[in-house]
Image (tube, rainbow, N blue to C red; front, side, top):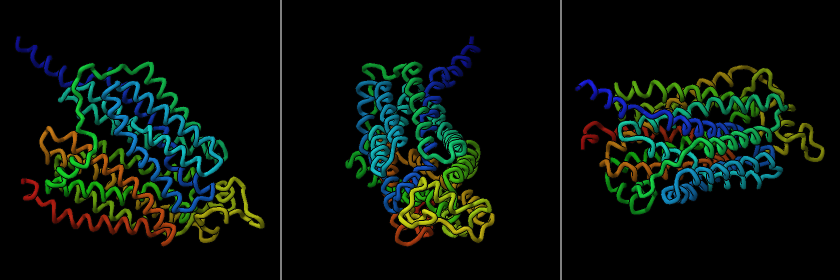
Length: 451
């Protein structure tokens, strides 16, 4: 008789993949659209003559719009159900990608990103679906699949972008249409495969929404205030890196859309390895405090190394080809080649070699390690620093601060790039991380964590 108990317990502890797998597939396909676009967006804007400052504003438009729209859609999903709001959000993403594909002017790129941002509650609503479909014992595992979908998306998406550019002679409109196709597929999967998971009359937590009162209450707790400050400031450094990297590699190495997509694949593989394997081992062996120190040190090292990447294009680089690709052959009067319509300078054909490419690949390793360990370890320590009833609200504040940092970082990075050169955004980000590393060594001592 007692032998039945382990079987019952194990079934309760086991994740119901029949419920979770459709959500995982939907998230993954949804993310493919986003990750196809990320490596190309800065270059797409540059092809319309945008300066680094304007490209920074373009990078900020999506998270700023998402900061406004996501909490509103989240509350609607609690009221009207997960499925209709997820579909509404996905339709907005589809419209945004179609706008990108049809774009023939810079303002259309801004409109596309704002539309997508305002409706950008896809991931948070999908996370709510997983929370509805799991119990306390299986929720962490279920939500962990969201991280796995992110990792796979950041590897597969840039590969699709690189292939689509290669077979279309570097037509920047095509990846946007492919992203729209994946978005349409995610809508169809949601409509036909995903059941509504919000039970009528259920008491869903409203503590994930950001509010000034909740923020002040959280910041009055010393350890929570330290962790939230680190979350915000490290993302200001890392978010600027993410948005400006394509411009930097264009300026230093002459990498076009295909080259940048492959670089993002390399970074994605490192992050998948870190989050899928190493972070669990390191966390169990060393703890979150060590991971935070290690992540900040790695991010600082990677950003500084990136800043000093030699300006040496690869042996196959051709200035005229890259300039024509980015401008579509558009040239100002008397201009040969058409590089003047580009607001971001590209390298000359001289001094080709592998040093610049090898250097940036080396620099990407500590950047990816730092970026891969920091947010999970900071949020993990954050959840252990509050009561169980406060976890949802505190993570909501963390997410809001990340959105705010992602809105500020591209603007700062673009201005630094524009006025002080391509080295400046990464050098400033590296200095910020060094200061945060020193601050964390002092503020996150073992005796502090026991309070």
